Length: 151
Length: 386
Image 1 (cartoon, rainbow over the protein chains, first blue to last red):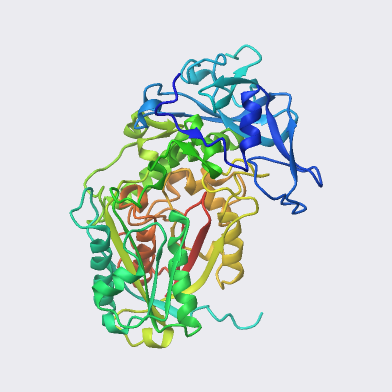
Image 2 (image 1 turned 90 degrees about the vertical axis):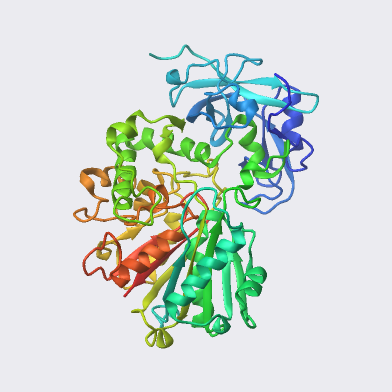
């Protein structure tokens, strides 16, 4: 997969850089308040519970369950249209189900977005994170099943 | 409760609109000028009397340009409302607040939209590296509003047993209403359930007919004080109640990260609206509910208190949304899904028609009408009365 034509995060975004750096290292992290411990994703400068501006990154197990999914069809930006219809998922983390991440269900770290049959996807399915290197700056977290698909 | 300084103190006295179509020749600014000019003529008010302007923030032709083109005099109130489809009712609400408190005497609120305009589809203006909240969804192929809402829809269907037939109920009802409305883009295009179910996917579980139209067009309303309104040519349509809603920990369109993602802005605007109203949901005979996507209707029915949590899909059964016999005729000119999609502003003008008795699907003797703006974005709502 090349970076050309894909929408990619700006990994230098100061509020997010720690997350993307951890992805490059193959670690899934979540922002937590350094003062009161409340976790929050997406990351942001201030803790809504105690208003502290101090935060840290907590490593997660990388396991979760599918909370929802959709299957985009064209018209889409060309890089995405080329692999459409594909799936997009929201995963809730086992370590903290109040934390959800948007991603894609794939078969492995280098899998394409359309490898999984969308008709087989089930809310509640257990998944685990894999890391897909895109370019020098961007590694994206994706998800693969941890158990055989039902039905 | 002390006297509400807003309730019934202002009225919509004029409405105007352009034709609705695709690829219209006019610029967005020209469309705005046409609609506003028509609304002023409908009100019988001269441009020189307008001293307040309210528009959406996502638009090319804003207050300065409009004022210069229409030959307005000095303005003492002007503002823009953000969040796209959530803004519509708030533009009228802000106009009402300004008139009711004496910041201006005559205010115009409008929405003009051209699909090709630079400002019209900010999600389509891609820079390759994304900051801010879109970086948590766009890279994964959640590219368009329909994809963002599809993720919430699937979850809603899973939790509450809603089906495609429920979504079809919404699409079919609004198409029927459009088929009676000569101004509607879908006036001559009936839709059958079989066509809905066979339609191509846009973002599963949403198909072509779960999406609003793509429209160039503009609409405008004129708001003034109740006393002045009584002297003008149309019966006044009073602004009875008005509210906005932006829930705790909300994230625009990709509201996946808070405690209860399916309880959105309607759940904040709704209770606030009713708390300032003499009417309750049970009193409302007709509603114009923002319909960029069909699933927003079940969600809005819940948020505005027409049914309980998770009951919105079932509410649509047995023709409940259909004029004339449904329990709540909804989007009686066809809505965004079948009349025109101008970020919900045509719902406001249809609400005015229902109060004036001039709708093409007129609910007999309707005393009030709920109008809402977008669910899924910071939103607003109005209760109009005659």
